[in-house]
Image (cartoon, rainbow, N blue to C red; front, side):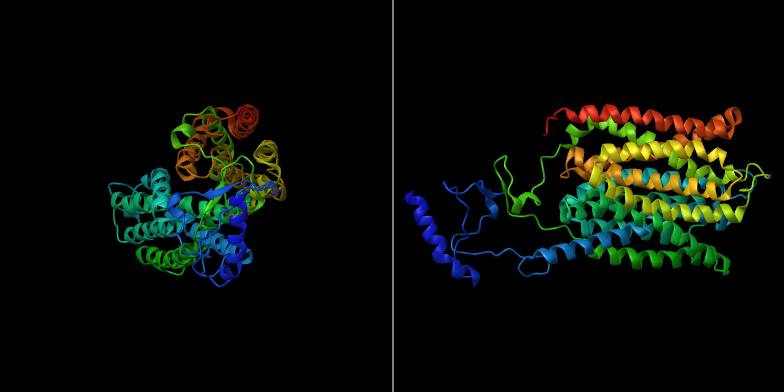
Length: 485
């Protein structure tokens, strides 16, 4: 009681001085018999201000922190992440750019001939490099922060694109365009989302959706830019260099807007959480080893493989399927190109929509609904060949579901394993998406002659149905307490 009385006198005496930033010690909350608020302490003793020196909490703009400034700064950070991803997502432009590449870049020996060109390997190698870059980016983010990490990633991506424009043979071109540029995409892929989570910890799904919207929409925009430059007569090398200048302007501007919210100095040391620190004190996180060796991780990785395979497969075959029957009403190149462009837009919008859904209803309900709808559209697609409207709706809806599955997947990873090591953990989970693209391609090549298009879409529907079972197993596994919880 004597200590409490003395402490209260100190607080009352120092309150006017605190308002004028006088050099008095910061009070630390002590428990009292009349207060239900639990005891809070600085996270690290090193954060304690020296005796007699007041250190008022500063915002990112240098003034006293205010909630409205925090919200505005958070939205600026998300905008920066979306702009950075707008450029990182242009790796998917290669399918369009390939049609304008000179003959010397089509085959490794530089000799033009008929047949499938070796240059189709540019994107798969870039995806492998992306997966290699993601864990590096996660570690770099912890050392230098999201802004510098994203800036380095975007710089590597731009440098790779620019230097590739001078290559006249495929192998050095792939070194720059696939390896260096792909590593850059991996470095900057997850850091903008992790920074956004720090500002809006309860809206991780929406933040992921808004950021990844840029990744999906970038290919749509720069496909149009590349086609416009090529059709206007700009040669291959100068065309790629002009595009790289645009990449640099947009991605560097976006990277500079990214900044994680400074952590609060205090977190609860009791199980009870108070309102003023709840939003800034994240729950316990799994270590990298705990996560990747857990049954939850194995199930979530398998769920990703099953969820991404139908969408990625459709992305690669919808036009080929549409043109497979010349008598069908959808066998029109212009119509199918338009549907592809709309599909890219709906894929981006799906990331925002389903990202918001997972925040409201949770991963389990959101992914179950997405998987059921995906199954439905896989069944509808082969039945819609004589209805351009139904076919276009089915393709765009399926691609929207694919985009949404990615946004929800990133969110579930953070919700399941925590955010402390989220970048490193997701870098391994992301390999499910890379493998899904290979599985889909091999599936079509190997089984199309035997089962036909209806059989292919039937298999994709079955994959979605199988995923519902995996989701149920994952639900039961999450009901069990994990070692890090």
